[in-house]
Image 1: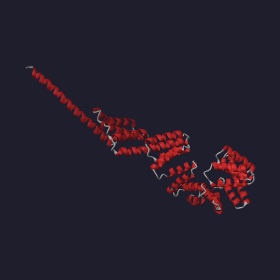
Image 2 (image 1 turned 60 degrees about the vertical axis):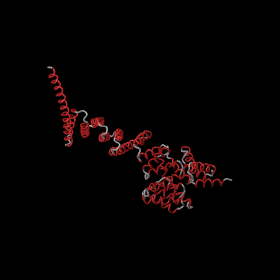
Image 3 (image 1 turned 180 degrees about the vertical axis):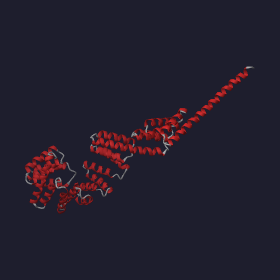
Image 4 (image 1 turned 45 degrees about the horizontal axis):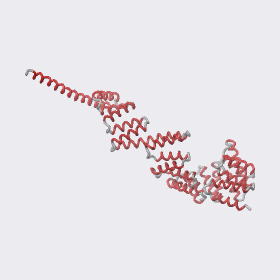
Length: 441
């Protein structure tokens, strides 16, 4: 019987210890909250060092207090200690994986360090955990834009440094994460076109237009692709689309005019080239295009006026004097034609001293030599050209003129037929071939 009070006393002590433990736990939690609130106060005062110290004290009291870890992460970030900030944001997400703001803040830390891929991985994980959070969706879009801009700059540097394979690789990798960029697909299409991979170029340009149907430069590249593939009608279709979107772009107008010239649709080409010149009257290339279409359309007075304007802009424009000479030949003015051929010889010869292997200059020089009667020397130059550049169509056309003047009609016909193989259906070559065939006995 005497043992019962002792037992009750032991039980009383145990209850007291439990109550003290509960009290200590509650007090400890209140202290953790106190230090966290103190940290928030210092943070608002922009005293990030004191804020960090208070948050650390809070974490000592309660290591699982995620709000204190969040405050500490924010304090580190504002102080520029991104590594420590990232570490604390990750701890927040371990303790509270549904807290969207921590994903966004951690991604922002990576973003500020230009670690775009890491930032996007964090945001993608955040969207998976909290799919309804609009801020994470918007942050992912912004991060993608910055990431693609960075990759576009890097890929351009690689491409210009003749590392096209690397340029393509990093851009394709970026697009696998952020596929919604018309500019990135366009750039990738450009890289593939430069390497003559027409299929992949076209795939990316189509994707670019799927994202932005008004992206006129994508239509321009598609036009170039089909021109390279010698499908001039399809090339024309895309060139017309470019002009429909950029009606006052002189480059687009000039390109369309030249394409129509290539198809020998001169009367259709003239308005586009006239508009290009009206928009950029000081551009020698546009002036030359317009003068040339006038010449091809047998509007010789307008052509000569155009070449006069060209001469005032650039008196050594390639092949200008040959073109003028051909007009005088057509007009039955041989003396004036000879004068122009001689000017071409002079200007081309001066340039050849600096660039003796330039095929365009050599071709122009040979053409002018033939015009003044120096066919033997012209023949030697032109034959050397077609050996060195077997796909240079203009050299075969020049060589046919030289052979004709030397009464080597079979050779002239052969040169025309080779030029025809390198052409896209220009009928003037067919006309010339027919003319030579009628000369045969």
